[in-house]
Image (tube, rainbow, N blue to C red):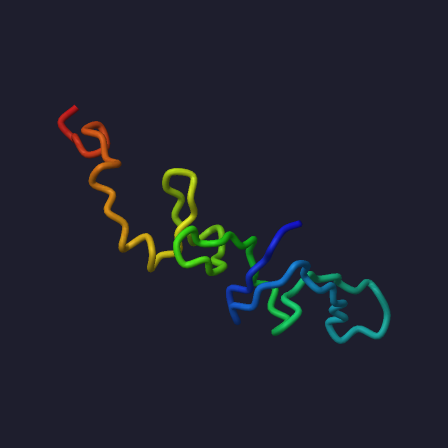
Length: 93
């Protein structure tokens, strides 16, 4: 089962809510939308848990290091100097 996070209100949820958008029409065709069940926004993403602080973060906005997801705040505190290889920063090739 996937976990989702709304990028507008920050709510986490198991499944998006399906709503029908009529666009002011009295008869179909209507549009079916999947939205956040809290704020009804269609801007949501799959969520992953930060390996350090254990909060849910959008998968598109997280960092992945050594098979672990990190939120932006926790990633900024990591010491990655031992993870870098000379080929990662040698621009004289």
